[in-house]
Length: 401
Ligand SMILES: [Zn+2]
Image 1 (cartoon, rainbow, N blue to C red):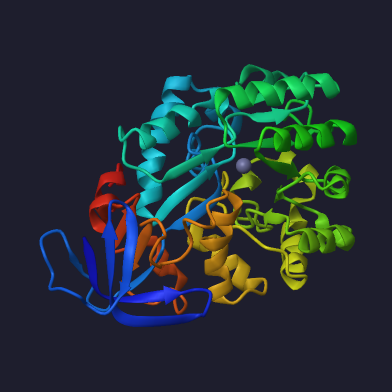
Image 2 (cartoon, helix red, strand yellow):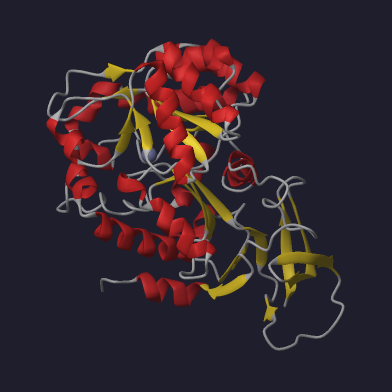
């Protein structure tokens, strides 16, 4: 199929070219250039609209998407404690919701009972429409005796170096795409206490992930969790990363080593209206400083990847935060395309509209560099070569009037 009269956004050059024709064959972009043939059946006339790479949501929980946004809805641990079947159905809905917002790749950062794995399989096998899914399965965590976390299948728990080695091997056996370790563990039933992995345990998890050929993501709300992983050179991404600004040398090290920062700045926004403010116990982790880390990381040239996490479900709002904190809109768009592609190891296949790349594309009514909110209502979404009409997707996911 072809997309005719397209203006193609080149994020590397910060230019829009066109109108051109984008030719797609069997899920791969085969040519981008002057129109070679008239429109045929199945072709799209973009009529001057903007084509850019499909978006990558670099930190998402398909099983939770939107679940915590309703102020009268279920509480944090109730959502996690729902039956696995119910959480799997939520994943199915989230796949469609992601597509409706131009997201063609999702990096799922953890689900109870690893329900993200069958969701990934459903897309790969053509059972459900959806974005490409990369997932860590369950999160690797230190044990905590709190009542609430214990009853939810949120994590794979491990303690001690041999325990960590076994847990990573177990996740690898399940077929996960990366390992995510949660550096600390707390529970609302005992908000004054955190359990931490030791430096040795964290480094071991990173080394084991690498030994199995997987990337290692570190969920960290504390500098002392980040420091040993960076020093040992075993970490690919820092998730959350607050309060890294308190130790700027860690941010400098991330920039030097190409460690990607996935801050989820909107989900954990330091604002009274932020969704996490429903959970006052979480404020024990200096959340009011989240944006200071992001601002400094931007200043020092750390590569950012955009994610929505728990309390946000619109990726463009994350990009707007990065612009507020110092990125240009083009740089912000890269955090949701090329940088995300790199994070999931697909930098050669995704992240640009050019011949040879996979046909994961969004077609927008205008130039997102002028207006990032255009990302929320794509005209067409092409995921894994399949064309989805944006308005149709939005109708399908509108379950409430
Ligand atoms: Zn998360």
